[in-house]
Length: 67
Length: 542
Image (cartoon, rainbow over all chains, first blue to last red; front, side, top):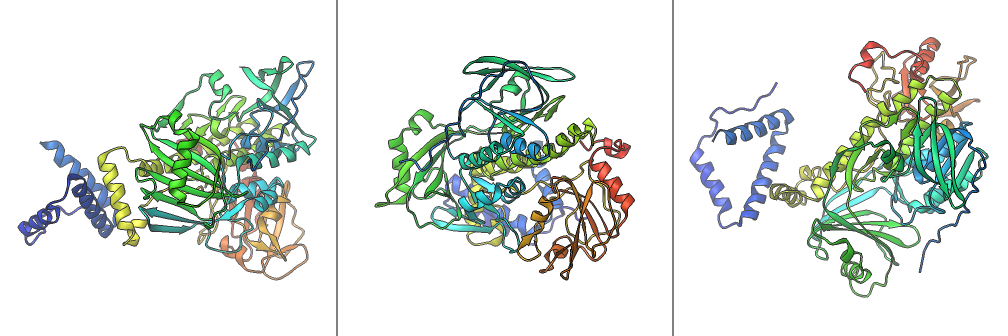
């Protein structure tokens, strides 16, 4: 069964972070929120596996609970 | 101008003595009239108590789904509804002023009834009343209001208020079809479980000559109503249903003001369109149900048992399916051909079916009325993506429209004992297909009011007790339904020699790749709850 891969996979993590900052630059909080939602929906469709998505949702929530 | 004048039915006289009746129906709306008519046609006498002296006010449940039309056709009122109603199967969703999603609910040909017919509920009720009045077995009592209910183990005693004063009557079985504010439910102290939504909506029924096509059209944030959604449906008599989302803070008294409603409609239609407003309703809604639909000798149907939002046309259509599910079972119990426990299967089958309706309706409502900033952002993100990407269109939810219930896991089903490549599994409703010259398979099933066996074979002498065989052949043959388009075999994934047992409500009970009279009789007995429930079935399947 496929599982959420949380091992380090990004060639250039700094570049990804910079791209995300760039795309949000100058947006209102509402517009930023919609942009993130569009991004998540696009990625979710690309992944297309309900089990992996459920795992990602749970992992995202759990990581926020730690702090 | 009124496009419809409500009939005025004469109040029934108050009976002199306390009589006992096999079945009393409380509530003469769409659901109560449907089950009364169904029972009458199955040889059961029914008393219907209705507080009003006419049909319901306002167009209300206008979208009659294909399955409801098929059920009405079995009761001989379907053709009248099809003739009068506006046929549609397509929908369009717009965001601001751009179309983002289109759907067709019945893209294939070869069905007697369309995906939907829009028809004001008062017409549906009037046609049902006419059919009930033509039946010697339906005793329709207008202006008879149930005011008290006293159930015991053997009967239910009702106190009924009439213009001439009160009287009592007793019933072997009481069917509570008395709507969302059910007197019977209140008298029994039963609570609903589920959700109440705060958003208010406004319905305006508008008379106009408009050139819009008969398409269900749904706008999110259109320029003429930027703060909410709008739904447009065409009805007969040049009447249009417009449903505006008003938000949670709207004041219903102010919103009901005809001048205010006129301004909203005028903004939508643009300058120069003449219209008149015929009916205004400001409403909120609930998605909830009774925990159990059977309470001893009292059974709850329709809005008295469960309620949904209007998005998806799952209210009235669920109620009609409730009536369809219960009618044959109650008739079998009263005729002594099935034990009383068959009535428990009404709850076991319609409970999950209504849960599905409530789930879809709640999800649609959450999409249409986002409850948080995050929900709103995701909803708008879906709409922003949907114009460009096909994947996002599947996420647009302006109402998932009513589909016939599939009674998965029902204790009345007999599981397949061999592999089937699709088709109609046990629990699903029989699918229509053309047969004979200009006939239909469901029309043929309508003439077999009890159990029927679809046999994909040439007619023979094999006789089954209390099961009517319908032979289906690919070539014309005397005594067989001619599957001239091959669509019966195709839709049922059937080959020569197959046999499919269909219940009186036209749901499939069992199917085989062979003709086995003993297996057929056993499946029929299971569908009548004659066989005691097996261990496996009695756990966790209710």
